[in-house]
Amino acid sequence: MSTMNAAGKSSPKPGIPVNRFALFAETILAGVIVLLLSVPLVTAPAAYAAGVAHLERHLSGRDDSLRSLWGNFRRALPGSWKLGITTTVAAVVIVLNLLLALVGQLPGRAMILPATLILAAAGAILLLRTAGNWSGSVTWDGDADHQPAEVPGPERWAAAYSQAKADSVRDWTGSLLLLAALFMTVVFVWMLQALFVIVPGTLVLAAAAIKIRSHR
Image 1: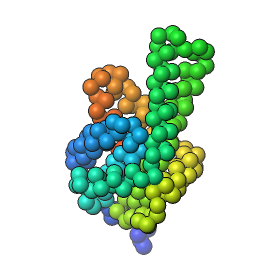
Image 2: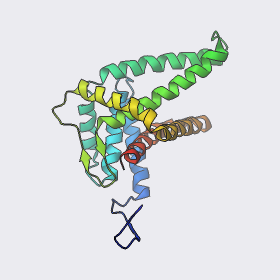
Image 3: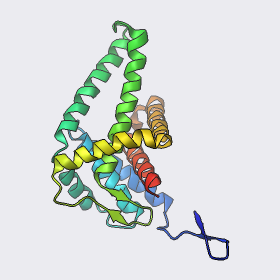
């Protein structure tokens, strides 16, 4: 990316150089940890919030240790239970609908199945944006504008959710990119079921990238 100097010529914009191989390795590692932290389902929002914050710290050249990821997860848990329970219930309903549709036992399958897939995609996009907004805004240069530490967990999550709803409409291209990332993960798992372990990392990286893109 470049900026115009006084002579009217473009000059490179200063930023943190990205080692693509290191980013790939960090994405896989963070994804596996997020997957493990999301096993209870109700902890998924906090796990993804910690994962997005972890990759943001890696990209901005700050502390990206596993200890900091665990610390972010513990800080994200308070106030995330309502969203976590909602996510769990929605996931169960979606999986049941898909299973019933596969065996031909879903009434109104022609209408309910597409509606279920659309709602699932919209819910996933909103969850990823909410998880990304939890940690505040981080620019490509690594400057952070975090919400004050004294903000209670429920209020912080409520603010992140409200901002995510606005961002989903305002930054519709980012929402489409997240949708593409979701579709890509589905294709990965369809091709080889063992690739489900990389799904969280792929989604966390996509959420972090969309967030950084919207704040540049």
